[in-house]
Image 1 (cartoon, rainbow, N blue to C red):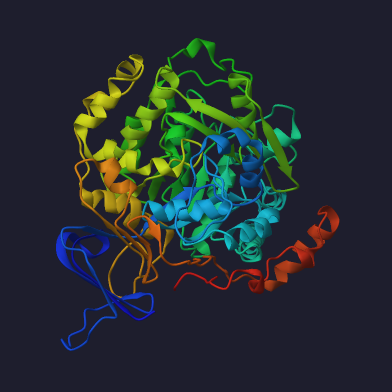
Image 2: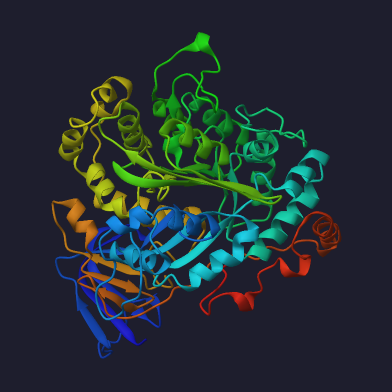
Length: 561
């Protein structure tokens, strides 16, 4: 790889306290190093970054980019692909579809084209792990990993019901290692199992019992949050709360935060969980007619809790206007969206583990609901005081494709632009949220936090999100512009592991990133009961279930200690 010097750039590196400091970044063999003290050392290549903005490579903490659910969405949306522009220019040409659910090859290059070098898939059932790793093999440039779904796993629910905490902890550790996943993910804990067990079923309150098991969402959240901490996993439990997308769900979200009682947790796509109004059931009717409230924002109450509880972090799930695809492990939600939109719908059940649902959706600024969703996401960015507790996401592709990140940056950094956009959406938005009154503007330093430093810290990736010695040589160099959408849409250079990947938008090196996963320790005596469970209930043999390390791509590795 040789020695690369990025010379004279304006560096934004929050982890190391660099806020617009002019300096050099030196990279040797894929890692950032201290600037050589010997003036006689000559780099193999020098990039002149004078007048340019230098940041670490971007990190997407929550997206849907690989696995059976994503592949089903690709097949379901041919019309979306047909309308998308060509994806890759330059010396490497492969078939690659764009749109809201790009193909694997396109995904890697589209992320790189924004200056992102790492992304995590947020929801893979263990039975789909091999499929996800296969797609990672074909996703260039970026480092990637996935979170393992456990919130509706039958073995998990059984151990919680029996009070077998040690067995629960050992199973979670084994399952992460077997899938070669990175973190524990909960989706509508207990609700997906209720949906599979009872026609149009769900759990709507934190203490509703899950059919056949008798456990509650509260128990699932608390026990798996504790497991995550006891296993010392790099990333806290990653929670998609109950009642996603439903009016009145802010109370469930607040109760979930309170139920964690000091345990570390990351609440994902928080915008979709911050709605006032009368809580509705899956058929669309109000559950409490006597407590009528119009659909509105309740971000202020939830952000107040986050602001006083540093152990809680969130990503936003920002909605952007346009055509996209709702893709979720939350089967009941998919059914609800199908009912209210009338659009085509896909639902799948992963035996004993999870489910998923896919529905096309179009967010329209003329819709009061969609416009409020857009505004509620921006309120989260502007009301959370500590940018280290919040990360940029669109819950790709649920709120919009990750390609919208530059537009979000523009909305956060330019108050006048934000106001101009607000003036074009449904008038009820100003009555039902606080966005019009929020004056805050993000700085480049804060943008570097929510897109790089904070995701790295929350994920426990010590070699990412910064440009200090030992960091991965992942660097993005932007040409400064008052038009922040343009600035963040087209980096001047993208460097991956010390190799120049993109030069002025053109691919110059073909690279494939690493797979990030964990391998927690557990009591191997627990395998006897796990094996018995498999032999009794699964359609796959126990020995065929785990993903062997040799199956991973050559770059696969565990995160640094």
